[in-house]
Amino acid sequence: MYVMLTHLNLNKKSITLNLRTGDGQQIFKELIKEFDVVIENFAPGIMKKWNLDYESILKPINPRLIYGSISGYGSTGIDEYITRTAFDIVIQAASGFMDALGFQDGPPRLPISDYSAGNLMAAGISQALYYREKTGKGQYIDLAMLDLMYSMNIRTQVREYMPQAKGHAMAGKILPTYNQYKTKDGKRLVIVTLTEKQFQKLCAVIGQPQLVKEKRFKTTVKRMDHVLFNFHYFPF
Image 1 (cartoon, rainbow, N blue to C red):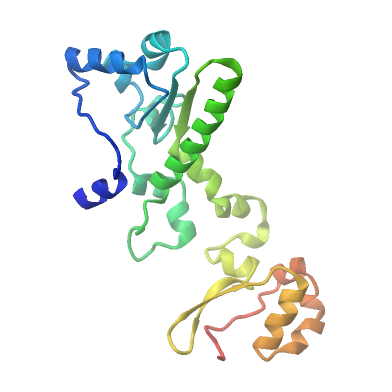
Image 2: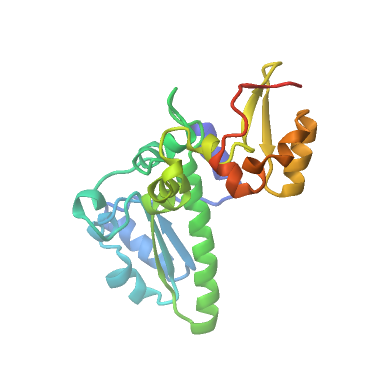
């Protein structure tokens, strides 16, 4: 954990404040006068508890301040969720993202929820900075990690609205020519075939050029309805 934190904070200047104390809160308010952006990922309500919430405290001090808040479930909505402490793996599970990627054998190796939330917040801050250049006003950015991961989990949306996507192996059934497969030598091969020209080349490479002429596989839509490859190993 220490190595990871060091890596993520290279070339940054740091200061430690105990925001639970009056002294720490006062120092923070003084710093706010010069800040452009504040980002925090406390559970909703914590900053208000420390007398440092955006609307009533920080915004009056610095109207140009851009305040970004990242939480698991957002600061508005159902109280039962708002008050929950969230971690990356919890959000991946709650959004169905772990199921979509097939993590049946263990937890995910990448903090996808955390990193994606940071990237999206950076984009929101960039937009807010542009808005401030035009208006002189700061903004409050409320980012819910669960909302973000729901939007990324397109598999759930597809399964909801497309009957042929029902079942666990959705990715292979909907577009088997856009997938990854195990080869005879134990390696993994990724295939991306979207256009008709790409499909023709794929059929030639695997030694099945006649598949191009079959009515079942004439278009991408028809190939979605007919599983083209139903074997584990490519013959090369």
